[in-house]
Length: 574
Image (cartoon, rainbow, N blue to C red; front, side, top):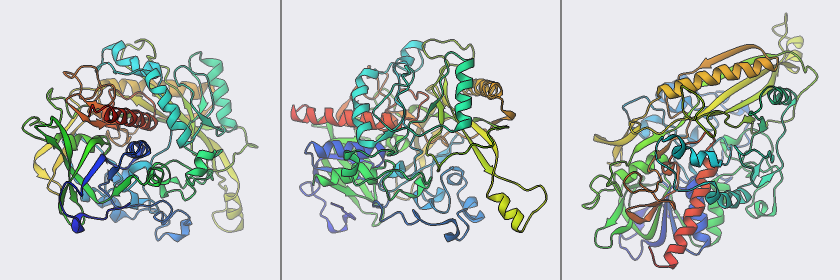
């Protein structure tokens, strides 16, 4: 069921009452909705952006490069008007409709921060990179081990069954590698490393004891199972047109998977164009009673009510909503007695990369456009602090490929055209994905004088790098160059692109989980310590970032918390 706007509705509790409200329809919100609806709860999903329906609303999914006015490149005027959004690797003429334009949703950068957003049904699940790695026990134990941030209130074994629950439904391609630093999961057939990547893999294994190159694990259906066909999804075509929306459902998105599944229960109401202003706190009951919503089409305000509320608006927006949810009991934001709401925001460090060439394997090539790369799990500071100048560590991702041949003489004509059909020399690209340590100083807060188009205070971002991040990057550049050199690569070129925080699109924290209400906002079940019927299960809940891509962890946390919430409702504890 869809609600298109509040104009035809009456603002009273009986018509606006549900069992559960989920704020946000992206990766974690879709999972919360699926689990809650499956358990019989009448669930309202609120999405601030426009409606996007699977297949129907992917207008460029099968377009050719010559079908676009600018051959799939954005014109200069767009880049000048959107200096933040245009930095995203996935934004082009075919995908621009899934990205927020800078001027339409302003925020205040106290420190440079590139906030990449996708406001539509499905959120960024339409445009994510789809890499999915479980956390290991070392990641959940890291805070307690080195004293940074606070201890996680859960461990790997608490989340392991929920990883499995999610992976089976989503469909994760990968290989069982038997690595303690990157636990195996429920995998479909893996993609394959090409000949040069296998050569580098062998070189790394021969030269390093604790470094392991594996094929990436990604949310693509290489071998669809009955559960995936039941969702209406089919196998990945290796087209690498994913960011346009996949009409095959070959990769996981809320639009192709969790939201339609929730809708089949008859318990889902999905309301797009609904900006959540704040959560309503009932002073007498001592819990949240609902949410205030502003319709982006009519600008009318409406209130919706429920027994349980899931906040899944994506990390920074979830912080914003909670900070703006003030009352006599919580004048500084819902559940924010300790003043830590919005604090300890962290992200992933992508600044370092290397390029290299390789002479050889002229007779080797590969098939299709594989949706993942080679990965190397973190090998720094894994079970103890061993590096003298930085805490935590980094994953390494790399890929090898061949460009087109280039003629030495002809620059046009038949010889030139023929040369472009031949593969050129091999090249290698290597990048880091580094863990940043949560810092009190890295935070977001509400502006006191600037508001957005709906009268909500704009978010102020004050998040930056530290010497720890720079030293980690330097180590990666040194180690990456050494590994490429040992594999026989040439022309190795390290680079620090000095990108702003945020461009990694992996922001986490601000509403962190923990054991003690004095030092955290959420408990082991993602409940607000001080408002038990509000759950936060997106990136905002993260107590640290690990070095892995975080989305599968968000999904597992959301599924786990939703099932816990249903149990608490049945026990009448909420």
